[in-house]
Image 1: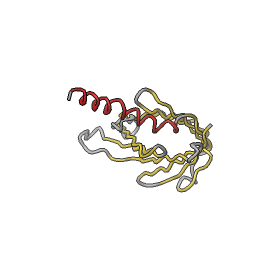
Image 2: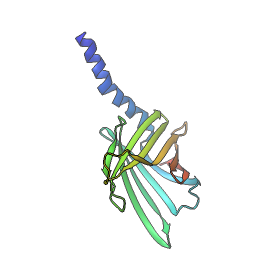
Image 3: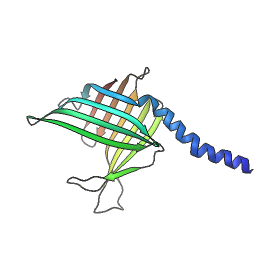
Image 4: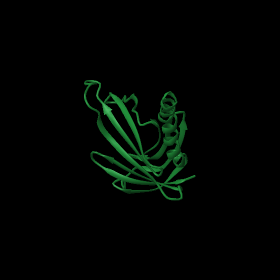
Length: 164
């Protein structure tokens, strides 16, 4: 009985995280935007690159966007991380809204991952998290093309990336 309990605990704490890690492996690496479709046609982004990596029990996404907005060039970098086990990752939101950003990752299949971004207000920390954005990442069968479908309350877009 004791051996069975040890095997079950090993399966829960070791095999499940390894399984989640193996299901995101094909997403890892450097990606470059090749096309924006749908609601983002009026986007000011001229270039978007991403590096997706694993750091312990988290997937890290580092994005660099370049473009022109109101006649001025910009170069923005966004770094985010998500826990492989699906638990919430948090960080202060800052900016005009304040609050806490709450990120979730759900691995649907080895070729589909969903990322959700929510915001909890500082003024009511016990209030439910309001979803700000959801992204569905889908890999092509050869794992060389990544399609990201993004949805917010007011818009949606589809961005295509190629593996570098």
